Length: 424
Image 1: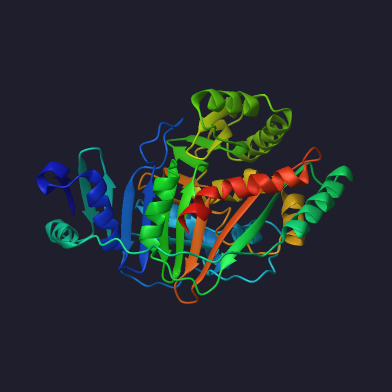
Image 2 (image 1 turned 135 degrees about the vertical axis):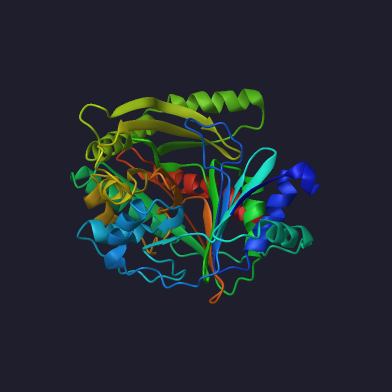
């Protein structure tokens, strides 16, 4: 099945049809929605896609994750999926001991029964069966009723005092040569939270539109994501990674905006952090790349988002012919911007100092096309929710270096969480 409908023939705007389609999709146990929010971005953001499956499947066993990823890479089909940060344990000799309150698996992909490709003036519906007209009729019949999306009573799993003390301890490790940089994160959570997941995602996406936003549902586990960061894209044989390191708030006037933008660009600490991760990504990509093809196409690019300016660099490479999704992920996951350098030691220290299990946070959601191309984000600036336990969570972090001021790092964490705290 493949059928295209123009929004003019449906007598609906693109925005309203998407809202209705996402609410229609919410009834299914597996849902993946990706949007680039029509934002200009180097190598573009996510394509605008919505996919569903009516199968309530059991996620693949962790120890078989890469066998499954190899099958996906060679299947010639369209897939939607997630990669939890804890997938690192299958790549390196690492462990995770913290409790998991959201219950996303280490990796999971599903082949949609129906998926939508949103264009500027139309939507194309694909599926395994006929029935695009019936699906559209069901979507058009839905009434959008705005209910309270939910308000959480947030608790900090790590107190500000403990955070500051841990940053100082991490700096001692850096001084002793254990690491150069460490991405240290903290969790805020709410128990017995009652939220409207799709509506809350829409509020978050409207408050903070980003090029790698998404909504992902796997049975009882929900992700509402407003990520500005790409982990990895494959386009033909070209690999593209765009790590973020460097954050500053937006100004209240155009003049203040310009001043803050220049301040971020010229900040030696932020540039040093960014350069460390650029070097790490270059090394990761080189393991899958043709010799001599790894290059930095943009260094210290400053990008404007609703709440913040971000410093983003773009590294590309030409993949070897034999490389596919599974082998490339083994060489690059998890993303260096969310670990630190050197990567393995940084991940060991993360386990030592963080009081929470990262789970899908600092992992990735994305899609794989039939031709083997793929695009994956970095799961940050996101809410996670379990519909059974009513546990709601968001996590934020920053890069710790020897030059970090602990109090300023804590302020940066709160700045990154601003949009989340304002919508829930």
